[in-house]
Amino acid sequence: MSTVRTRFAPSPTGFMHVGNLRTALYAYLTAKSQGGDFLLRIEDTDQERLVEGAVDVIYNTLKRVGLRHDEGPDIGGPYAPYVQSQRLDTYRPYAQQLVEEGKAYYCFCTKERLESLKTEDAFTGYDRHCRDLPQEEVKRLLDSGTPYVIRQKMPLEGATSFQDAVFGEITIENKEIEDQVLLKADGYPTYNFANVIDDHLMGVTHVARGCEFLTSTPKYQLLYQAFGWEPPTYIHLPLIMGRNEDGSVSKLAKRHGSTSFEGLVADGYLPEVITNYIALLGWAPKDNQEIFSLQELVEHFSVDGISKSPAVFDYDKLSWFNAEYIKRMEPEAFRSHAMPYYREVFGEEDKPWEVLDGILRARLTKFQEIPGLLGFFRELPDYPRDFFVNKKSKTNLENSPAMIRAALEVLEALPAWELDSIHDSLMELAQRLEVKNGTLLWPVRIAAAGTMVTPGGAMEILAVLGREESLRRLRLGLEKLA
Image 1: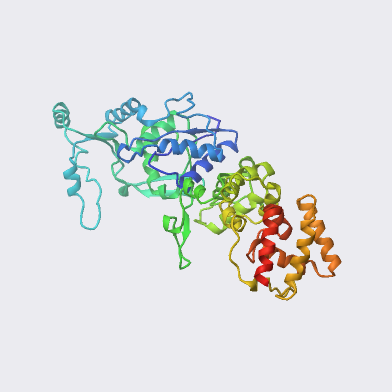
Image 2: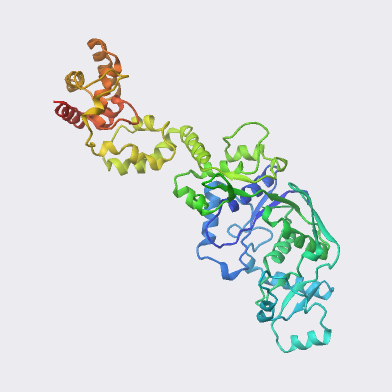
């Protein structure tokens, strides 16, 4: 099959971990960068681990980051159904085929017997007790309805090798490979078995998965060999690590911060930022570009750019990406994201939103920061008189009252309370008073905001506060200085 076909095959067991999302992204990019197809398949054979609502989480996450699948449970396709629990009739015939060919066998061992194989130190693996049972005994047990699983007969000698697109040739001694279960006692296939059957039947050509599965891939390889099928191209992705407090790194976990897509979005990171950032966790473009749209990732991506080395999830770097995306947003998009937080501060009151957009865009790392940055608009803080003292602006407790009185006189006479008119009138006033702009604007800003650090300067703050509130606060500043 000449068309590249990849799949994302998650188990609906909870939130979408960033590692799972990166696997989905790399599978998508592998296909789309070569004009191929991207499939979604839900692997729900482990019924005990299923979480209600997890399938919707998968759909919603892929939709929010823009990974549109060409085939899947919700849109169908030529190999439907795309949910493994709806394909149970598919797997048993293949398991039976291997039994008939002498490549698999019925295993009647009870849970108690399997438990007895465990030692205090470790699980030694299945001892192949049922591998060579006489056919008469097998028939007797089957006829009596004894529960069983079907296990694959693994080679007892030699080694199994496969070629990985990232890590090269990987070889595992066969003596280390257990006779794996293909079909469980409840009739459900195991993850490995269903994976191989479905990938083959659906024409999957490239399989992306985490490198933690490198040592289990020979089991897949032996299944392909048992059926005489062509195995796919394996693309094992490097680990994602988190940085510990002592500077060391370990596998990304909750102690490092949010590790799921939903958690990161709740923390204030934009979906497109998360996609952009995780694309760079293990893959490097051929130039120094860091900011990518999804379409640009498709255009730049190649499997040979994937690294073997673990990638460290850097939350500070993710925040930098978020800030850069906010700076580059179209005005309408910025306002749409910011408005819920504006309403949190101002309620339904109308404000010069373009002024707020202008002073916030370059300062925000996350939109959730807006209420904290604008809190002084809602209520004037109780600030000390010392805030009026600033050596750089040459303001002190002696000249600040005069500056505020002069500003009040000019501002009270303004016919229209707009940013441009406020700006022009105060600039003209500073020139007339023969003082530096800062000497006039510092005490005005402190009186208006009641805080040393503000987004925007005095003029923008006055414009947002409005005439009545601005003049009230300036008069309160005079009283504080009296």
